[in-house]
Image 1 (cartoon, rainbow, N blue to C red):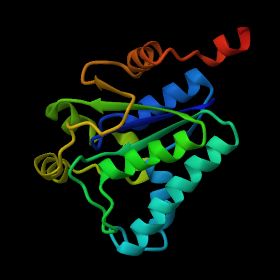
Image 2 (image 1 turned 45 degrees about the vertical axis):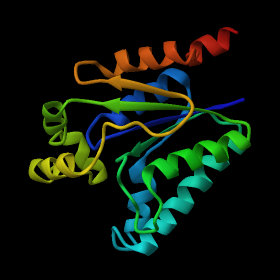
Image 3 (image 1 turned 90 degrees about the vertical axis):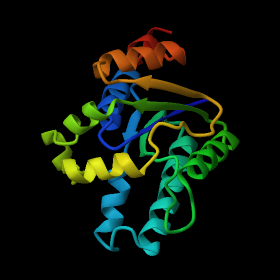
Length: 192
């Protein structure tokens, strides 16, 4: 049974940074929000029904294809507990449905809700690395999001680990995840 690890949380919480380290440690493939979103947004305007419908469809299909191939996968999702897509799909419904669909295919779906305090998020949103994927880098917009979105309530999923990574390195977060879920590194897998 292959694992699908879903790192979710606020904008700028460090999902991709942790995801890269977790992927490297476990030898899993990594996919993230902006790979699919940027492709779709190159054709359809962001926030439209057409764009969101296609993004949702592609995300399910990509995750399902990874499970079918037997590939371990780390994926990220920007999660607002009160966010509802123009399609009517809420973030809690999306993650619950993803969990159900992948489990039905035989995957072990493990969720990690990354959280950080407001000051940390505001400092991270201006990080130069965010520009590579055209991520939000404006502090005023981030303040608005933090006031509007519920980034602290966890998704209604079975296996969920909450980590405040405000003062933790990506390596420390990966250690917590691998210990909690009893995951073996790529090197440990080779030995066994």
